Length: 353
Image (tube, rainbow, N blue to C red):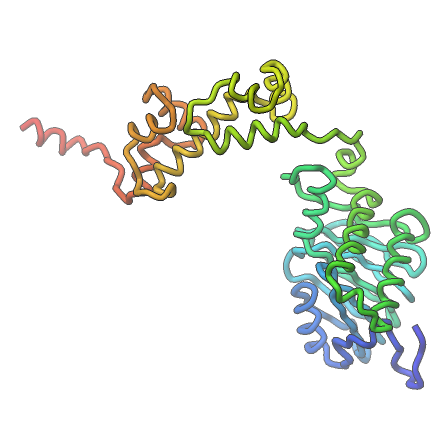
């Protein structure tokens, strides 16, 4: 970062993408809050405030560079909804999440903020830094791609990391490259088909290189993909759920033995083919009771029969266990009918009279 002819300003990377050059705390707060997260900005004592912010977005990643003449305190007014990486190019800052304090020191350390955190950042006078915002949906999609399935548990990264080795050093090199390309006006950062390949690699490297709540899963021995014949069976069962289907039919369809199909389903899907089929039929029954299958909500007995359930009582018991309400309750919600209520004792007495 080169100093300009002015004693009070510096030339920041991403100068082609200015966001703020201001001595107004309110102006900087409003602009920063729009690009990152709602933040309260404070200047300790009576120091003269002067700040520069540059900002450029590449797909799901937004890169900001900042310089502050005075000390600054930024307080997140609500938990952040994205992932943030923060590095220092000059000076020092402190990032506080709850009772945890993390130092960001030029050429030494960086910090990561995960969604649900509400950090406070204390910037030293003369601080120059880079902040990277990563959309949560993009990070979770990358995680799902590495794990093969979406994760229900929140993804939380360690808050502190070194920038002299491992992920931190690689991240700094990649961001230096990306910033240089943006400064030169290169076309590829604005070309989604090219930029997305670079950014996907960066997210994969972050997930595999920065310790997180999912590190054990991510570094577990890779599991081979589900055999194609099992996906073929599952697709067939889903599309023919309301037709009579036998294990012999599935064997003929795939050319695999019944035992292989059953063993494969237990291993890869945790159920038998017929249990899978039964689950699809329950889903179809629910859609029909709710009137979402192209027709008005049908009666419970008719729906049970159409969906292959011959015993109405067993259907009702299993339906409640699966969806937390009886088939009749589902249908009443769909039709808007009020559930019957028991008469008050006085009403019963009057009825007997």
